[in-house]
Image 1 (cartoon, rainbow, N blue to C red):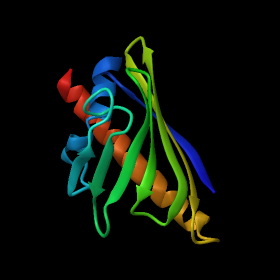
Image 2 (tube, one colour; image 1 turned 180 degrees about the horizontal axis):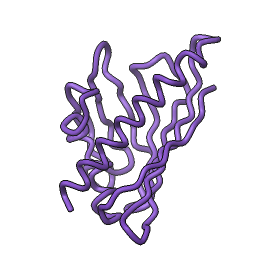
Image 3 (cartoon, rainbow, N blue to C red; image 1 turned 90 degrees about the vertical axis):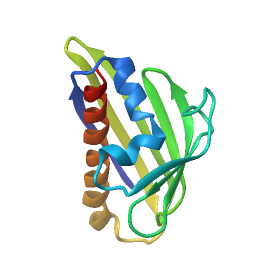
Image 4 (cartoon, rainbow, N blue to C red; image 1 turned 45 degrees about the horizontal axis):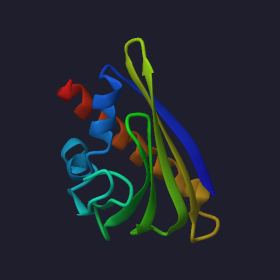
Length: 144
């Protein structure tokens, strides 16, 4: 199993940071990792809340994820439905207001379907999550 947490800070207010991080249709606009991001199904509250299905296209099959928690402005979580050789893949993003903006922590827990490649995949997962986190923060700071 792969499990880690990455934490970064933003100068954006917590509501702005949360809205940028959960703008599923715009994820590809603020990272070079993705070619396209779409929303296959809106969630509750619309459009980005619980039950939303987002499709992230990089190289190869798209990553399809479902939002399983949405507590604006402090927390959301998603699970991977398809697109990667994982099972029980859950990402949880928590936001905390600070004196200078927002602290954002992204926790990932994933079990790979191919035994023995955890050590190879850990740096890949960390790089991807870090890029998504930095992109979300940059988008939030442009909005504020």
